[in-house]
Length: 389
Ligand code: PLP
Image (cartoon, rainbow, N blue to C red; front, side):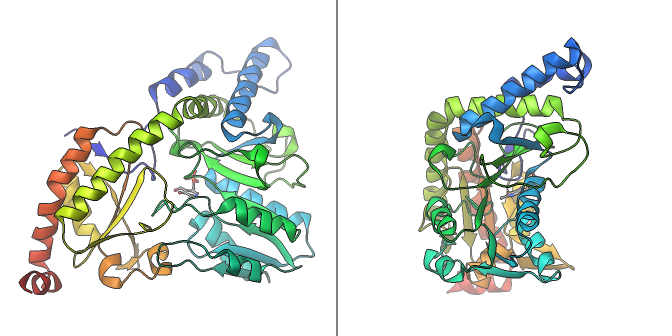
């Protein structure tokens, strides 16, 4: 069965052009970029080119780009660095809907005596900047807010938030793992100090990430050892993946406007048709600014896991808004923070599209999902009650 892959916020297919770019750096050009000889030097040149390509996508300077192993490492490195640079400050601000790479870290820090404010979101998953302003104080060391949410695609007003935070003298970090390559960012005109991205969300392989560190931002490395990455991240570079990351960023930079428009049209059609064909649905984050590729749709009186399994039987890959914790299916922390009613949160499904998504794949979901939902509603006592009304 050929898969219909609509789970691109989980991970993306490596673009063949990216794969071709990285291929020679395993068996042929395998030198260490730190070596003095010509063989290492030619790899160093390609790593430098990759750095410039990432910088171009972000509107950044090449020396502001630090290669890491993943988005999670970039998030951890950003927050840890701030705490080391300003040891006297003990207050961190984040939001309730962050990825665990930020949220778990912040919650763990409360056990070490840090005060952590988790900002609320409204029913659309949107931030209230007044709450941020009220939370900031002289003790705030870093504010970490995601650019776009991985579950709903909701885009936070990051530039306004960053300006507010800088005016208070704290550092500002954003987890832009889901935003980079989908919407334009320009660090040259931004107040952001630190920004995380991840290769496997933009058609590069898993196991490579980037931390953008604005020139002049004080920084302490998470990994210490060799002098790689100008002392900001020790460890021999994952050269093939870094080169792949550079190519992926170049492709995103060249094609984003056209691709994002096409993807948005397909996402909007999927949303329109599904809400017309399936009664009692709502779009999580539907009333605010969202990524062009993400659709989180809540369907009452059904369970996400049931939907996913039946979709999977038809070859359709999506993801649910629940997390399996100790055997019970809890709605995700994001949907809970948004106050999505229990009956909807359980039946929330995320479809996330990419440059490889086709109209035929969208047609297949529009055809297959409505009968799956009515079948599941027939099977559930709440669903039957609702259908018999
Ligand atoms: N931040 C966000 C918003 C994500 O969606 C993810 C991955 O799902 C991460 C961080 C972690 O990135 P990585 O898988 O590269 O560690």
